[in-house]
Length: 219
Image 1 (spheres, rainbow, N blue to C red):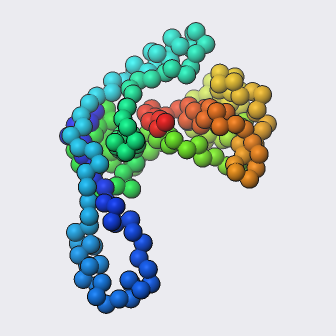
Image 2 (cartoon, rainbow, N blue to C red; image 1 turned 60 degrees about the horizontal axis):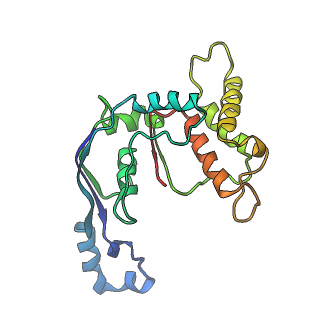
Image 3 (tube, rainbow, N blue to C red; image 1 turned 60 degrees about the vertical axis):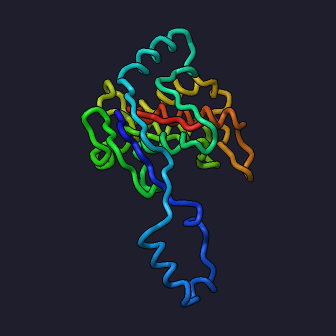
């Protein structure tokens, strides 16, 4: 739940880099002090409120898995033109607040406050950025298996952590059509690897393998 949500960021003038001349110029000291005490700020989003009910996505997920489709699992959609604050809104709901000057208003994760989530449940709330950033030398299966292994549940019906990770990796790669590229490196601008669409599916599998309670997808 979020109410009266307001996110404040620094203005464009705060992102200018100083030169050696401007730093050593004694006439700029007053300006530096003024910016430190009163930085140029602006509201990125203001007056947002809403509720995302628990369990809706899980019910849709079970139905869609029966029909073999897992790509339209959506609980809430945020639409807006570029620069309207969609990414800021998703980052705030995902408790990624460090890059903003200030976040005001109420945000509750069921009965938990953002501070409690940061301290005790940081891995249960995830923000997936638009750019698909992975280790380029790791293969598709290694990338997904690592995510599954570090978030393996404590109760695994007698299976080991490695067995659970292997099963989860094979299941996700099968659902998202990545079995043919399981031994292919992710790649980057230098190392040849998988395609952009396959890399996006790897990002989705990686997030699902971590079994997060709340995931914000930035597209």
